[in-house]
Amino acid sequence: MNQEDMKRAVAQAAIPYVPSDSIIGVGTGSTANYFIDALAGLKHKIRGAVASSEASAKRLRGHGIEVLSLNDADDLQVYIDGADEITRHLHMIKGGGGALTREKIVAAASRKFICLCDASKLVDVLGKFPLPIEVIPMARSYVARQLVALGGQPKLRTGFTTDNGNVILDVHGLEIMNPPELEATLNHIAGVVSNGLFARRGADVLLLGTVDGVKTMTL
Ligand code: 5RP
Image (cartoon, rainbow, N blue to C red; front, side, top):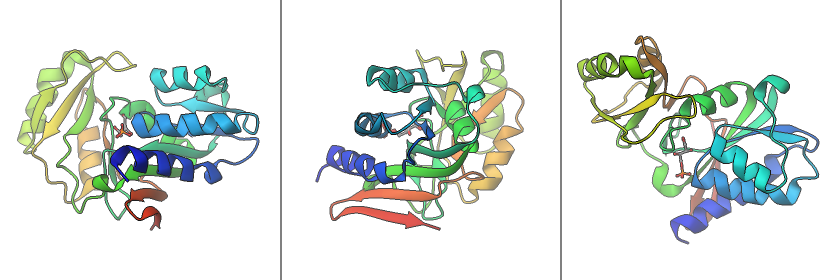
């Protein structure tokens, strides 16, 4: 099984977590795209989806799945998305696709977070994958200096604007020993919209694609 096969396998394994007659939260990225494609087979069994990005909304609509605004939905029963790194504590780095803020909002509004990853993303310590931070454009340099003071090396994601009209700083060189603490610290920097640490609201279930098949991990 190569990495793409693993992504496809975890996407398929997420289908039993989709309740009938529900509105579900749907994430962003290549693994989430496989899930959206698998969801197309169930489209008559669900009421619709809340998407964490314009790209996912477009893909969902392309399959004839109704896309709702979060404001028009109650709490969602489940949110299904990938991640860039995840630990056994089900803390994650997300935002490689730049959708971290909407992902965090939809995850917060969901009762259960099912994370879909191939085996390469399971790590002991988060931080090898550069941590994405969404920043209000006028605060870019100020926030970058604060990130340097915290020991990181921020790099502006060039040629990229988020769905919310902001920029992304990708922070290299972090070894994140206490993800919930760093998540809160970053949120307190003026100009930071959100950061890619999903630790305070981590995943509830990890479906991990391995060469031996899909493994289910919970806390
Ligand atoms: C997008 C994300 C994605 O979940 C993350 O980047 C993983 O993407 P992929 O499934 O393509 O590896 O957080 O903002």
